[in-house]
Image (tube, rainbow, N blue to C red; front, side, top):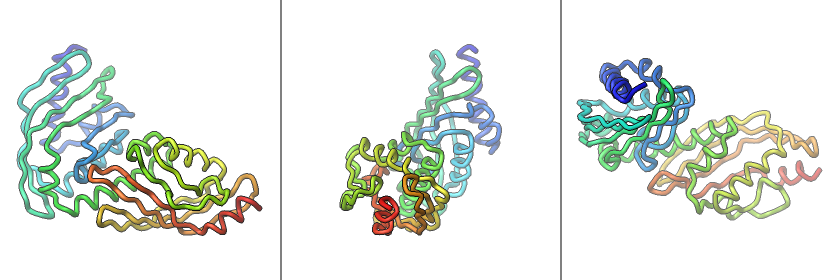
Length: 268
């Protein structure tokens, strides 16, 4: 595939977007596509998505929070397997009725006949102003839901991508000899937390409710697991508290659980 052909594919993709033909866009993406929005943007213009289904959900969320009033690509530059497009768009936040206009640059990376990687650069502050404070809460809830989804698929690296380098994880927990309940700091130690969960055989992990405000998200999770070493069962509804920095990364996380029961089950 030559460079002009790649430009034509991106140009057609933009036409499909304007016409609302999202399935046509998804068809051009590889099954394992990585889709990168600024991490500090308001929901849904934030974070990394992987796979066509996640990108499709992004476009669905976009229509729920914003009315796009114009979308205009202006210039294209191709080199090797990449196409960089430059343009602008205007829209109106549905919750606030505020308008925004921003220039953008998008980098499309091809692998064979499909797009494998997408990165956008734009004025995310303008998007935040247009979508308002509720968008921050929605963004944070969306990130927590994404973390749970990544946990379900075993993608620890994806989880760590959403954390600050100096994240505090159960930082005030007392170490009572339960491998998964102890204070941890930094991504490396959080990775060790997830490794410690290999001691459990999960039967149920079901997020239930989400509340957000003041840069935090509280969520309840139905949890059931068997401790492999003892055969003891753990079954409870946990509360998780996530705190975010202004850029949308998790700066702290705390589990609220029945610690006595965890001690009993792990040492029986």
